Amino acid sequence: MMSGYLFISPFYLLFAVFGIFPILFSFYLGFFSWDGLGPMEFVGLNNFNIIFNDPLFWKSIYNTIMIGLMGTAPQLIAAILIAFALNSLLIRMKTVFRLAIFLPYVTSIVAVAIVFSVIFSNQESGLVNQAITFFGGDPVTWTRSEWGTKIAISVMVFWRWVGYNTLIYLAGMQSIPNDLYEAARIDGASLRQQIQYITIPMLKPFILFTVFTATIGALQLFAEPQIFQGGARPEGMTVVLYLYRDAFGSNAFGTASAAALVLFFIVIIFSSMNMYFTNKIGRSSKVGVKK
Figure (cartoon, rainbow, N blue to C red):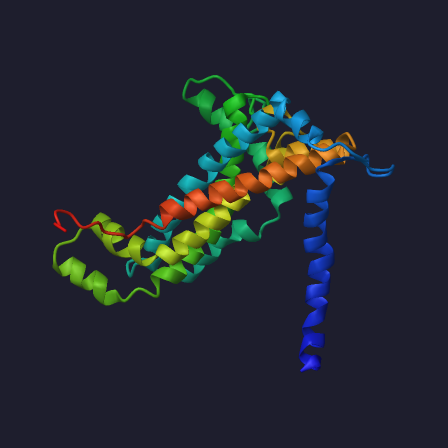
């Protein structure tokens, strides 16, 4: 009996040291002032008072939510449509398309951010700016524009994660019996009706999973805005960037931990909301039933 616990103990020991301890220490550190080297000083709720009175902190929350909505909501919808197409009998060379759609996910985040920094270059010679000027528009300073930065980062997030969610939905669709689609086609159901009344309700567990992971990932966005803007700027400042700047830029680990705690509760709130609304997918309400 003990030998079994000994075999699995390395994982739990490493998880305790590198997982549980940093989380608990961050909760503890949120109520102290500490520069990382000197002695800790208990300050109570002062760290929270500092960040709540900092306009940049509220700006980071706004940016995080907006980029999250712009990058994940269209991504999940597109992933369902792409997965439906890849699952169709009309598509040939499915393996090649599945590999191609999954490649962005296995690509390094740094490499993706660098490539998109070139695509969304501030120069007129940038790929996107050339397309804009071709149609008569003015070039955009993407790394310093309020909405330009959000659009560029959202496109980056969309491109990288849509393939991952597509494969999850594709795995779910392959578990749906083809008899349902055949019966729907015989009854005259359109493609939209097949997706709406068969595919989406049957994919409910997979949609719950992707919504949950996408919400957490969107609220923890860090590498993309950091590399795209070459540092923390207000236009693309996310909550993780904000606490990173406090911790490793200003050596204010107390306020950084306080921001991390606030982010922790934001993740819980948004994940719960998304799970609640997503859980309603496929439910049918009884109309006109008298008690």
